[in-house]
Image 1: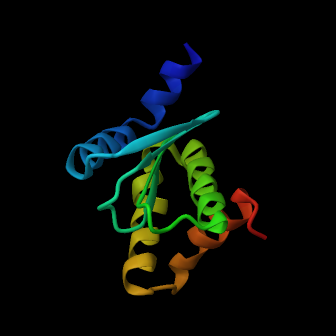
Image 2: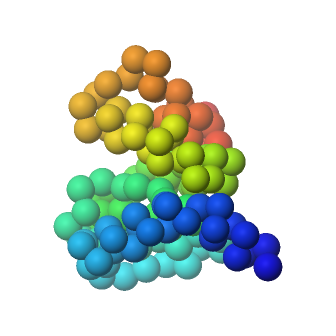
Length: 116
């Protein structure tokens, strides 16, 4: 029952993850306790959506792995608001180098994942 509640809490993220996995066709996955890592050779970086983390092969740095785990922890706290409050600012920050007041999700993800 707890698992179902968590899936419903993070449903928008899981739906987006499913769409991205269909588009990028993963080549392998690793089940890491409470997270599932999908490796997609054509994916241009990394993204955390619920307990699903999608990343490209070229970005295997340990700090990136911890950072994405930090985002998955944020997802637990924010639930349906994660995409708007964390996801959008994070994508803007990563894509365009925009830090302004939206740099906090990235810094918090580093702390939660153990990068600091």
